[in-house]
Image (cartoon, rainbow, N blue to C red):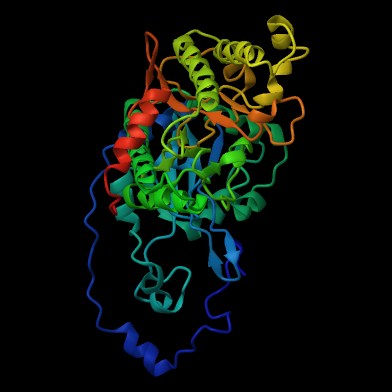
Length: 483
């Protein structure tokens, strides 16, 4: 295996052994076909972000890898998804690439180290199943990639020398993405590298105009995916949760890059399992179906939306009562969002409504203030998670930001966050009336903090109980068609 954990070409028992005459035959008779590339429209945004990062670390070398492919089984690999920060700074999506910002008097020079196309002057293009052009497709040349991304490029083979030349004690690495880079630049003060990760997270909190376009695109595709799922969901017979997962996944791969995270499709009591991704149950008429799904678009921004629907098409009175309670909680949270509001204030707005509702349902045997007291938070037995999280290139975006800039901080215009209250009554919970056992509801939307308030980016899907029933009926009246 090489430094990335990949098997060397020809090392597997099923690899062919080519005779020299065949190799000579393969080397000749090829026409060069340049790629038609032009500067990406978002390239100036990437340059601006690199300048912001440069300003935060004057005089220091910064190393931000994309990451490497991970083995799935023997010599097959998981579909590659580059590191978020690398994409945010460069727009590069390929494995192994590394951005190096080297200090200058006026800031930093940026160089993107990438693996260029397979050269025709070696046999790599037809013998190397990991990198060869006839095996995995045409990569860009260094000039092509430089033109497209508007950043200086260099051959990946030159990276080791560049890292060896980096000043000790004046170099920071975004670690955990590329073992070879981590090994080359040993961590002498881990807190310095952690600060790089923190600053990158905090720089990404406010989304620029192009990022908002990408998020809206991902959300719009997600809405279409939910519509597909509704069309494929029968009202009168059970189907596998994986049918719903697969229908949504088809839309995600067709209109986007992939799903942004493992789809949660929880039928009946499975909806009460917060991160239910096995999806090996079945829907049943009369029960609820919780679908927490999001598309990652082709520029790798992701949506995160949840809807809970009645499989039969109509909520029972008890289901509706719980659903309406969660809906009121979500609306209270959305109404609270505006610049300058504390993140925790949005949380409390949602949670107060849930706690009041739990008391009204007879589930919570305590007064409201006792239930909400930070030293007890008794209501959280039935709603373990918070009201939401930041959203962007990662479904749980900006995760390395300081608490005082995130969970213990205040909202700012340009933040995008989810609002997703839920109630979950476990089948084994003896403190819950029998009729509530296995009943769970979550409603989740993606919300932009505007200069004056909030805008629901996922309002293409209905939220109220009446609208959900009408939407489900309308979608079922339409035949499911492949995208």
